[in-house]
Image (cartoon, rainbow, N blue to C red; front, top):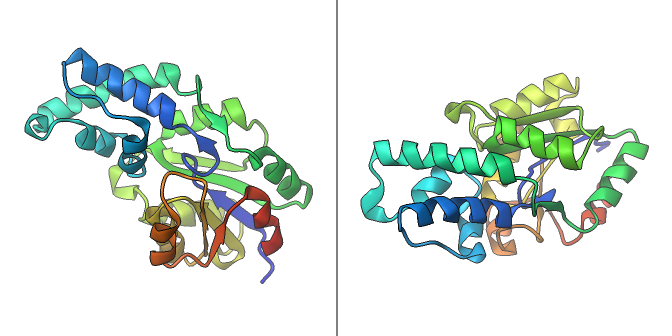
Length: 215
């Protein structure tokens, strides 16, 4: 199969953002004198959007809808000012993007992170690499719903079967499957290999440059 494009997840795939996410959320939790969490715990919280992360981070007895909304708004306010402080591309990602670009492979990003933050991080760290960048603007469109992946395929003017979808969680693998794209998992992200294998990933990468072999 001659693949012509790659859609990447952002957090845990292109960038290690866990410290910025955790630091911002812990700042909000501390302001309420709620327990905070370590970076490894936050790796299990991410993947389904910041509102879902807020629910997981809050104490169980503080999850009323009004409190969730208040904490979510505070988290967004703080995180939006810090989202590129410690966040960096994983080793090998920049080399991968350069090689794919040199091969005229079309590149895109699809994240469950808020759309404005997704675009801010991509613009700051990866200027001029991606033809489409989509974050979460409607909860109904959250991955593994394939609607945004399919919209990107139209933007790229390619059928879904010509596109590789790369991510670090079961949600990403399910999104790829739902969109009829090749599902590729990465081992360097926020979840372990077993989650990706059990989700039915078509391929598993241990280093970014291994993706080149699929072309």
